[in-house]
Length: 193
Image (tube, rainbow, N blue to C red; front, top):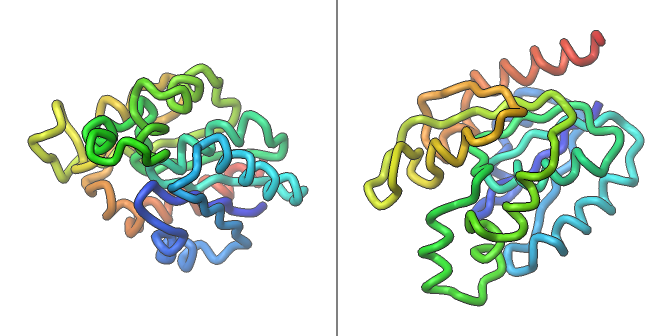
């Protein structure tokens, strides 16, 4: 089984350094170009994953989880996923950010009304999926409970995933030992099936 790491919008594969070092498994890092459309990035990711015949276990942060929804639907050897603070219903911050940088593809793709987000909500998640919901880091310019970047409502809007709440903010979650422990146990459980 290979771990497939997909980072968040403002990050890189280095954001998973702690988790990857603790899991010590064969990994694939899927980076993407924030200046290109989500469709373009998704096609590049799909091409990369079709090269492997190993079972794929996704470990994603934020926007990376949206990409994983699409990938688990089209890559047959996908077996499970863990997402960290993924905005399943899009990002309200992207709405405002788009006003300042209107031509930036990333902000267009992650708003709640974008086709990338809307279409992802129509895809059934067919693999065991656990979302870690980050519960601290609240900022006043986001309506409702949030982790400083994503609202709790956006993180918890799907009914086909399991949820675990963790007292970390949007960026601290990638340093959580609780996440590492869960992934190790989950991988062992999946391997026993």
